[in-house]
Image (cartoon, rainbow, N blue to C red):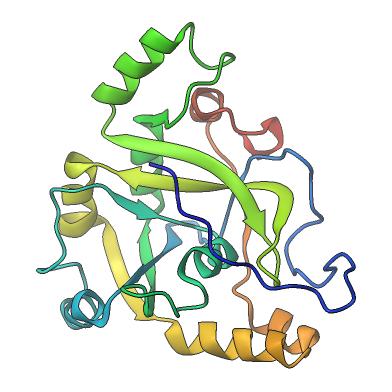
Length: 227
Protein backbone atom coordinates (compact mmCIF):
# COMPACT_ATOMS: atom_id res chain seq x y z
CA UNK A 1 0.00 0.00 0.00
CA UNK A 2 1.40 3.38 -0.99
CA UNK A 3 0.12 6.47 0.75
CA UNK A 4 -1.42 9.13 -1.48
CA UNK A 5 0.51 12.44 -1.25
CA UNK A 6 -1.09 15.52 0.18
CA UNK A 7 -0.49 19.01 -1.16
CA UNK A 8 2.32 20.40 1.00
CA UNK A 9 2.57 24.00 2.08
CA UNK A 10 5.27 26.30 0.83
CA UNK A 11 7.92 28.29 2.59
CA UNK A 12 7.31 31.98 1.80
CA UNK A 13 11.02 32.77 1.45
CA UNK A 14 11.75 29.62 -0.55
CA UNK A 15 14.42 28.62 1.94
CA UNK A 16 15.04 25.52 3.99
CA UNK A 17 12.78 25.05 7.01
CA UNK A 18 15.10 25.14 10.01
CA UNK A 19 12.48 25.05 12.74
CA UNK A 20 11.72 21.32 13.00
CA UNK A 21 12.41 20.39 16.64
CA UNK A 22 13.61 16.90 15.64
CA UNK A 23 17.26 15.94 15.16
CA UNK A 24 19.06 17.46 12.18
CA UNK A 25 17.89 16.13 8.83
CA UNK A 26 19.95 13.03 8.08
CA UNK A 27 19.82 12.16 4.40
CA UNK A 28 18.73 8.57 3.98
CA UNK A 29 18.43 7.88 7.72
CA UNK A 30 15.78 5.29 8.56
CA UNK A 31 14.77 5.54 12.20
CA UNK A 32 11.64 5.01 14.24
CA UNK A 33 11.32 8.58 15.46
CA UNK A 34 8.49 8.70 17.98
CA UNK A 35 7.15 9.92 21.30
CA UNK A 36 7.92 7.03 23.62
CA UNK A 37 8.61 6.02 27.20
CA UNK A 38 10.27 2.91 28.61
CA UNK A 39 6.94 1.07 28.32
CA UNK A 40 4.86 2.79 25.62
CA UNK A 41 5.02 4.47 22.23
CA UNK A 42 2.59 6.82 20.49
CA UNK A 43 1.33 6.30 16.96
CA UNK A 44 -1.10 8.47 15.02
CA UNK A 45 -4.15 7.72 12.91
CA UNK A 46 -6.74 10.01 11.30
CA UNK A 47 -10.36 9.02 10.84
CA UNK A 48 -13.83 10.38 10.26
CA UNK A 49 -15.82 11.47 13.33
CA UNK A 50 -17.94 8.33 12.89
CA UNK A 51 -14.92 6.14 13.70
CA UNK A 52 -12.97 8.48 15.99
CA UNK A 53 -15.87 9.30 18.33
CA UNK A 54 -16.70 5.71 19.33
CA UNK A 55 -12.98 4.91 19.65
CA UNK A 56 -12.44 7.77 22.07
CA UNK A 57 -15.42 6.72 24.17
CA UNK A 58 -14.44 3.03 24.22
CA UNK A 59 -10.69 3.54 24.65
CA UNK A 60 -10.07 1.32 21.62
CA UNK A 61 -11.36 0.94 18.08
CA UNK A 62 -14.88 -0.40 17.76
CA UNK A 63 -17.44 -0.50 14.95
CA UNK A 64 -17.58 0.97 12.37
CA UNK A 65 -13.79 0.43 12.47
CA UNK A 66 -13.06 -2.74 10.50
CA UNK A 67 -10.54 -5.10 12.08
CA UNK A 68 -10.48 -7.30 9.00
CA UNK A 69 -8.67 -4.77 6.81
CA UNK A 70 -5.14 -3.42 7.04
CA UNK A 71 -4.76 -0.33 9.20
CA UNK A 72 -1.70 1.93 8.99
CA UNK A 73 -0.19 3.58 12.06
CA UNK A 74 2.36 6.38 11.96
CA UNK A 75 4.79 7.31 14.76
CA UNK A 76 5.69 10.61 13.05
CA UNK A 77 3.30 13.43 13.94
CA UNK A 78 4.27 15.58 10.97
CA UNK A 79 3.98 12.69 8.56
CA UNK A 80 0.46 12.18 9.89
CA UNK A 81 -0.21 15.87 9.25
CA UNK A 82 1.04 15.44 5.69
CA UNK A 83 -1.19 12.42 5.18
CA UNK A 84 -4.37 14.01 6.57
CA UNK A 85 -3.73 17.58 5.40
CA UNK A 86 -3.73 19.01 8.92
CA UNK A 87 -7.03 17.19 9.63
CA UNK A 88 -8.80 18.69 6.61
CA UNK A 89 -9.09 15.70 4.26
CA UNK A 90 -12.41 13.87 3.98
CA UNK A 91 -12.69 10.99 6.46
CA UNK A 92 -9.49 12.17 8.19
CA UNK A 93 -10.89 15.11 10.13
CA UNK A 94 -10.07 13.68 13.56
CA UNK A 95 -6.46 12.92 14.48
CA UNK A 96 -5.92 10.38 17.24
CA UNK A 97 -2.78 9.81 19.30
CA UNK A 98 -2.81 6.13 20.20
CA UNK A 99 -0.50 5.00 22.99
CA UNK A 100 0.47 1.34 22.62
CA UNK A 101 2.82 -0.99 24.45
CA UNK A 102 6.42 -0.69 23.31
CA UNK A 103 6.79 -4.47 23.38
CA UNK A 104 3.69 -4.75 21.21
CA UNK A 105 5.26 -2.52 18.59
CA UNK A 106 8.42 -4.63 18.64
CA UNK A 107 6.26 -7.76 18.20
CA UNK A 108 4.81 -6.18 15.07
CA UNK A 109 8.16 -5.06 13.67
CA UNK A 110 9.72 -8.46 14.29
CA UNK A 111 7.06 -9.99 12.03
CA UNK A 112 6.99 -7.25 9.40
CA UNK A 113 8.00 -7.33 5.76
CA UNK A 114 8.95 -4.33 3.65
CA UNK A 115 6.08 -3.31 1.38
CA UNK A 116 8.34 -2.99 -1.66
CA UNK A 117 11.22 -5.11 -2.93
CA UNK A 118 14.72 -4.01 -1.94
CA UNK A 119 17.62 -6.06 -3.34
CA UNK A 120 19.66 -5.75 -0.15
CA UNK A 121 16.84 -7.13 2.00
CA UNK A 122 15.55 -10.06 -0.08
CA UNK A 123 17.28 -12.49 -2.40
CA UNK A 124 14.90 -11.88 -5.29
CA UNK A 125 11.42 -10.49 -6.03
CA UNK A 126 9.83 -13.92 -5.79
CA UNK A 127 11.07 -14.54 -2.24
CA UNK A 128 10.01 -11.02 -1.26
CA UNK A 129 6.48 -11.58 -2.59
CA UNK A 130 6.23 -14.82 -0.62
CA UNK A 131 7.44 -13.10 2.56
CA UNK A 132 5.04 -10.21 2.03
CA UNK A 133 2.07 -12.53 1.56
CA UNK A 134 2.89 -14.39 4.78
CA UNK A 135 3.68 -11.36 6.96
CA UNK A 136 0.98 -10.04 9.33
CA UNK A 137 2.61 -6.59 9.24
CA UNK A 138 4.00 -4.40 6.45
CA UNK A 139 6.49 -1.57 6.74
CA UNK A 140 7.42 1.20 4.37
CA UNK A 141 9.89 4.05 4.75
CA UNK A 142 8.69 7.38 3.35
CA UNK A 143 10.28 10.84 3.46
CA UNK A 144 9.52 12.50 6.78
CA UNK A 145 8.07 16.00 6.72
CA UNK A 146 8.95 19.43 8.07
CA UNK A 147 6.56 22.08 9.33
CA UNK A 148 5.73 23.04 5.76
CA UNK A 149 5.00 19.36 5.05
CA UNK A 150 7.87 19.21 2.59
CA UNK A 151 9.96 16.02 2.41
CA UNK A 152 13.14 15.85 4.46
CA UNK A 153 16.10 13.55 3.93
CA UNK A 154 15.13 11.41 6.90
CA UNK A 155 12.81 8.45 6.34
CA UNK A 156 9.77 7.93 8.57
CA UNK A 157 8.33 4.48 9.19
CA UNK A 158 4.73 3.61 8.30
CA UNK A 159 3.43 0.38 9.82
CA UNK A 160 0.58 -1.54 8.21
CA UNK A 161 -1.23 -3.92 10.54
CA UNK A 162 -2.95 -6.77 8.73
CA UNK A 163 -6.01 -8.55 10.18
CA UNK A 164 -4.05 -10.67 12.70
CA UNK A 165 -2.01 -7.74 14.01
CA UNK A 166 -5.02 -5.41 13.86
CA UNK A 167 -6.97 -7.74 16.15
CA UNK A 168 -4.10 -7.64 18.67
CA UNK A 169 -3.92 -3.85 18.30
CA UNK A 170 -7.60 -3.38 19.11
CA UNK A 171 -7.91 -6.03 21.82
CA UNK A 172 -4.76 -5.61 23.89
CA UNK A 173 -2.13 -3.18 22.62
CA UNK A 174 -3.89 0.14 23.13
CA UNK A 175 -3.26 1.85 26.47
CA UNK A 176 -5.00 5.13 25.67
CA UNK A 177 -6.44 7.19 22.82
CA UNK A 178 -6.37 11.00 22.76
CA UNK A 179 -7.92 13.42 20.30
CA UNK A 180 -5.12 15.69 19.09
CA UNK A 181 -7.15 17.39 16.36
CA UNK A 182 -7.14 20.75 18.22
CA UNK A 183 -3.36 20.51 18.54
CA UNK A 184 -3.00 19.80 14.82
CA UNK A 185 -5.16 22.79 13.94
CA UNK A 186 -3.32 25.10 16.33
CA UNK A 187 0.09 24.13 14.92
CA UNK A 188 -1.21 24.59 11.38
CA UNK A 189 -2.64 28.00 12.25
CA UNK A 190 0.71 29.12 13.62
CA UNK A 191 2.54 27.91 10.53
CA UNK A 192 0.06 29.82 8.35
CA UNK A 193 0.63 32.92 10.51
CA UNK A 194 4.43 32.55 10.13
CA UNK A 195 4.71 31.92 13.88
CA UNK A 196 7.18 29.11 13.31
CA UNK A 197 8.73 29.22 16.76
CA UNK A 198 5.26 28.91 18.26
CA UNK A 199 4.40 26.02 15.97
CA UNK A 200 7.64 24.23 16.79
CA UNK A 201 7.06 24.61 20.53
CA UNK A 202 3.76 22.74 20.23
CA UNK A 203 5.12 19.74 18.32
CA UNK A 204 5.16 16.46 20.25
CA UNK A 205 8.72 15.57 21.22
CA UNK A 206 9.97 12.63 19.19
CA UNK A 207 13.19 10.70 19.70
CA UNK A 208 14.78 7.71 17.94
CA UNK A 209 13.67 4.32 19.23
CA UNK A 210 16.55 1.86 19.46
CA UNK A 211 15.62 -1.34 17.65
CA UNK A 212 17.00 -4.83 18.29
CA UNK A 213 19.66 -5.46 15.64
CA UNK A 214 17.74 -8.32 14.01
CA UNK A 215 14.63 -6.18 13.56
CA UNK A 216 16.70 -3.30 12.18
CA UNK A 217 18.41 -5.62 9.71
CA UNK A 218 15.09 -7.12 8.65
CA UNK A 219 13.57 -3.72 7.93
CA UNK A 220 16.64 -1.95 6.57
CA UNK A 221 16.75 0.54 9.45
CA UNK A 222 19.83 2.71 9.96
CA UNK A 223 22.48 1.22 12.28
CA UNK A 224 22.35 4.29 14.52
CA UNK A 225 18.88 3.23 15.63
CA UNK A 226 19.83 -0.27 16.78
CA UNK A 227 20.79 -1.89 20.03
